[in-house]
Picture 1 (cartoon, rainbow over the protein chains, first blue to last red):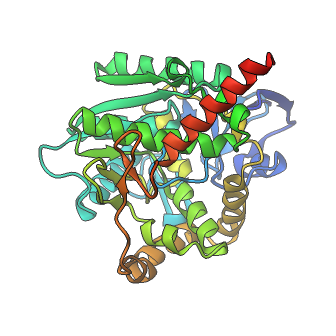
Picture 2 (cartoon, each protein chain N blue to C red):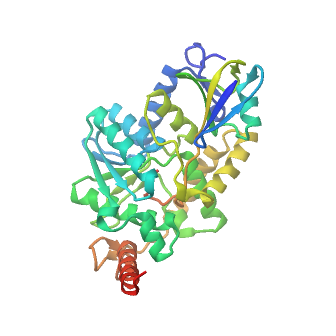
Picture 3 (spheres, rainbow over the protein chains, first blue to last red):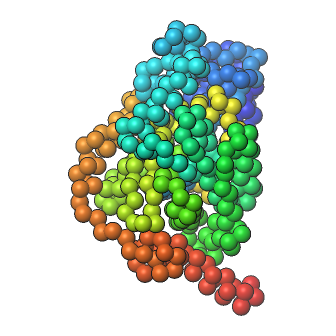
Length: 73
Length: 307
């Protein structure tokens, strides 16, 4: 399967049919830190990804400012 | 995997709640969580107009979307920070979001006030995130008061709040711990109430909501955030969460229920009034006016030296 990782815009190829959680682990993502997107649907971590899928792995982590009490997020 | 609520195929797995949701049930759950937080913490009184601080990121746009959907009277406030292309994209996405929904948006371009974050940070040699935070606080309060909004809502989520709590505990920042609440009541005539309706919503849940609602948010990270301490704290908490789901929520909820009330009961000196701008201050000048003066001085010196 062909995977695009955002926000880095990095492309990787992963062979075979795989569980989404396993792919995330291999790419270095902790559980709950990235969405696995196939077309217009989300794939849960226990979901299967097929060998010919086009997948987007989108990080959900953001931050920078020291969490000021009243800054924007 | 089935939806815990309706048994349809699930699209989302929330390990901290041991729950799976299909799209429709997740959106219902998200909306209910925000509604409950607002009601339980008395964030917004009936009829109050809410000024939503929007950056163009997933959290603040998700917040604005859900508040509008819940029927609140909202306006957006966006600061175009002057962080190169990142700010340009953020502003474009925020403006497009508001236009598509017919929502009122106030946009302030810091560069027009000579205060682009990267310029200010470069001139004063302060960390960019520190300068950015000082300016955000100033503009949010000033514009909310001037435009008659009694409440400002920000998109801080569970991960933001848990990381902030961890940082405050690691350094035993007692005054900061005393003020770490989902609702901050004003302590000065030029302050307004600050609320964080997403404080129990994880970063993942906010991103999922934004995706499911088709919100076109800024996926890129702020270039100034690279190496930020907050991201280190978030990573540590996510490692803990991976082996013990629910840790972040418990950490924050138990702090708010058990420790925070005791800390908040200590008397806090009210702010005075800034001689420069009339906003609250803990000295003759507020942090924003000190930053502006320092920037102007450095800019004049640089111009005089011809650099």
